[in-house]
Length: 129
Image (tube, rainbow, N blue to C red):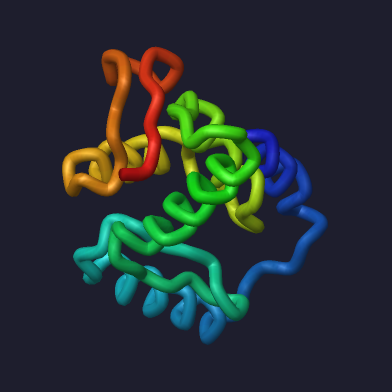
């Protein structure tokens, strides 16, 4: 986030510079990440890990099941609500645009039914088939 980058920049004179070995290690890690083809990276076990784009699909489906269980009848759930529930339970930052992309992908795969127009997350609802 830009605020954190600004703090790092402002405090850079207070923190010691990286050693040559540390810098080379970070460069190697970055090059390894840059060489991967995956579109999604997650923070796991104090390291960045490249994962398949479907990494959060099971979580999205389980959150939808949970929201359905809270309803008397299995009705459509506003997609923004589902996306918010998914983001709210994560311990790392994943953009809502990415989660919505995965919801739409699950619609196309037939996991969800859709009601409304998917021009933005507040204009359509989903429910599990």
